[in-house]
Amino acid sequence: MGQKIHPNGFRLGIIRDWDAKWFASRRHYAKNLVADQKIRSFLRKQLANAAVSKIELLRAGENLNVTIHTGRPGIVIGKKGEDIERLRRQVLAMNNQVPVQIAVEEIRKPELDAGKKNHVSPGHETGRTEFNALGC
Image 1 (spheres, rainbow, N blue to C red):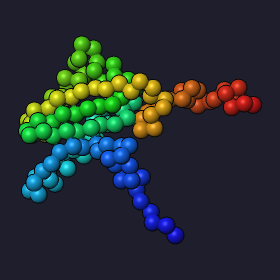
Image 2 (image 1 turned 120 degrees about the horizontal axis):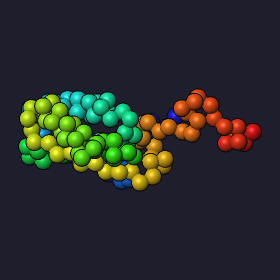
Image 3 (image 1 turned 90 degrees about the vertical axis):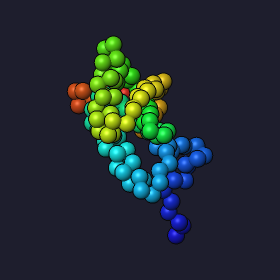
């Protein structure tokens, strides 16, 4: 039997990049890691309808930069930027008032992105698929 390796670890640094980019001392590492997980789960829950593919976190000094890759940037940003500003304030409160910047990157072809969780296929709303699409 061959050795089993995790596919993400195998691709890191070659064709896939890290989802969180920061360095912390031993004393602050656990605190930052837990904060990152809380922020990711909060954003995924808040943006369940926005087809979020990936959330990248970058901590540079005392700042936190969050990049949300989504197939529906209009849902994330909201009317006149209200929704993204509300998200920024909520993440700021979760992260002990560390300055937060949130950027939204659009996925040009969301149907080709395997990381997107909320893809709705044709006929999914009704629970039926068309027979012609299946070749019947």
